[in-house]
Image 1 (cartoon, rainbow, N blue to C red):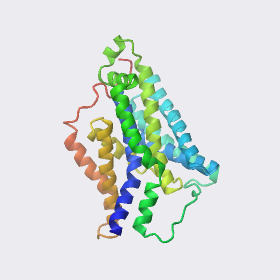
Image 2 (image 1 turned 90 degrees about the horizontal axis):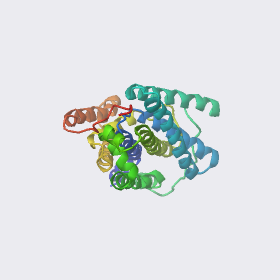
Image 3 (image 1 turned 60 degrees about the horizontal axis):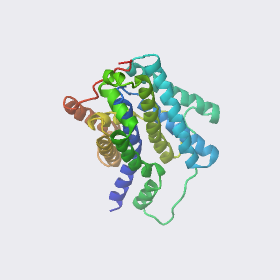
Image 4 (image 1 turned 120 degrees about the vertical axis):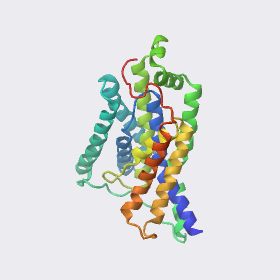
Length: 298
């Protein structure tokens, strides 16, 4: 029973970063802009949440600052791919490298360390078993409760709001949207900013759970989230379900480490290898937004 509770707790802690990043990817890609910058959004969100929480002793302020940082990152990415017409894949890779380097520089400036920040305060729970304590700790994370709100909110946005309908129109039929007076650059910029804000919350979930920022702590989660976007066929709820499935796979890997006689590096590669196999099988049947990969005007 204790092992089961510990596994559930592990799923609840590893899923939010993937889920928020996947939702951010859905918003951006539904507007027709390929987004591999999710890794950078996670790093920027984690760094901001931890640094502001340390400075203000308030997780709430850290989360608000994360949203602001996400908006800034989305604007930078939009400037590149919408304003300057950069190739989105190349711009996304460059953005990931930029955030990995920038966060290390800022760590050095703020804390005289290029590898990690100071740790946030922890709460000890005497008398609780390991499984129960882990589950309580996982359920105490505010980002866990924000996740279903984000899933339902984005589903409502795409279905019932002008912005959501315009994002879908720009991603599916950009020329038709232009003829109706819709500005492609404006809608795509709005989608990229919103998507980055949501994805940055995934970084906040990662940093607040680990209670400090570590260099390169995203660890490829942005690319797993991108796989969830594809497997979920660019729909918020489906992408969220795949994010949960990938989170469970990561939790299984962590649970098996040290238990089965398999090298840890092989176990760590398991979620990525299985995801690659699944994506390879699904890619031909999943229909991406028609204008995905074209960030120019029409």
